[in-house]
Amino acid sequence: MIMLEAASKYWAELQPYRSERHRCKNYTYGRQWKDIVTVEGRRMTEEEYIREQGSAPLKNNLIRRIVRNVIGVFRNNYSLPAFDDVALPGQEPLREAYGLTVSGNEMAELYSRVLEEYLIGGLAVVRKRFEADAEGGRVMTEVVRPESFFFNTDSVDPRGWDIHTIGEFHMVDATALRSLGTSRFGAAVAERSAYAGFCGVRVTELWRREGERWRYYFLADDGSILQQGDSPFPSGGHPYVMKAYPFLDGEIHSFVADCIDQQRYINRLITLNDWIIRASAKGVLLFPEGAIPDDLDLEDIAAQWSRFNGVIRYRAKAGQPLPQQVSTNSTNVGISELLGVQLKMMEDVSGINSALQGQLARGNISGTLYEQQTRHAITGLADILEGFRVFMRNSALKDLDLLQLRLSDLRE
View 1 (cartoon, rainbow, N blue to C red):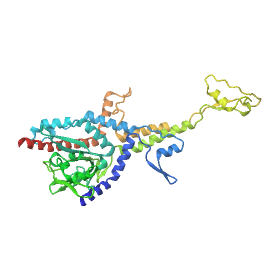
View 2: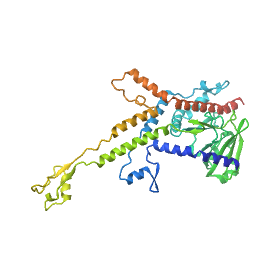
View 3: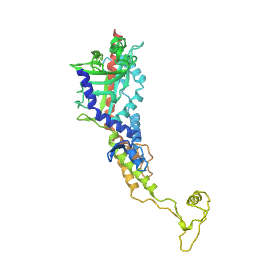
View 4: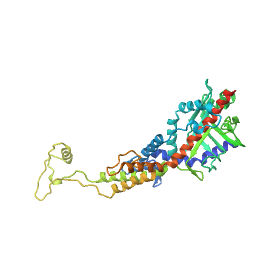
């Protein structure tokens, strides 16, 4: 029960991270008026409040474009870890198996999606397992959902070297029980009668460092141990690869979080501009009451006014003003200038300038300067992308660690 309580405690302490991630995900995918506000004691979303005021909650989703551009820089400038860059002495027989692992897991696509999670939430996590087959086995890489993941929250090392407890919660059925662990410690799970009563419920997978090696535990909701054992990894480690950003004092802050304030201000400006335009008079007809003919009413006049080639009869009187249309321009309060400033600030904050977005250079900018602007923009992203490159390298090392099981089988 102590281990289950520890897992629940660490998971609960990561709630601020999950809440911030949920907010960043909303902003990335266009749900940008979902923040909760309190108005006269009532809690509602900003979208609901704006609609109650008779306005439309408009948005111009720049964050999504920025995230796509960063992923594009990654795809164009970063390659997957090569075997020669991560292999240790004596691992040459694993070259082909490593290549099959990379292609079989579609790692280029998988890493792009994990990078998207890394940019939005600030935490990238995958899980490795060894799957036996007729050809000797392969390593499978699975993306871990942040909602179910936990680790000891007193960790402050950005390399993760001080992590001593790590794991996730599974909702399992009879089929999924077979894949909770690697083939060396998970194949017999479904065969155990003790699991018969736990199908379709939560099972906690917890890895704990004990001495120099790790041990794994599968726990039921009452704290009982369903299965346990020593790590099957040749290195004695756990199956997770994680990278948190920036992890200063153990805190996780995402790339997208830095862009939200500018995005909010841009949305407010375009919503305000729309309100001003709609509030200004546009083609209003002023029709003196004394000029309305006896056989017509205002509805008839309005119908003729809106018709193409419509004709409106009116009763002319001396000293009475003629019917006239009123149309005024919206008041210039500097919204266009403020919007331009915020768009420029968004580029400065995100590091994604027009050159990196692939926009055509102005005629007065030389090709050399344009290329220099692109390089400078990539430099601004170097910190977060290099951190993700370390994540990919650690993932490749974990692949080779598990492939050692295949090499051991070949030697046997």
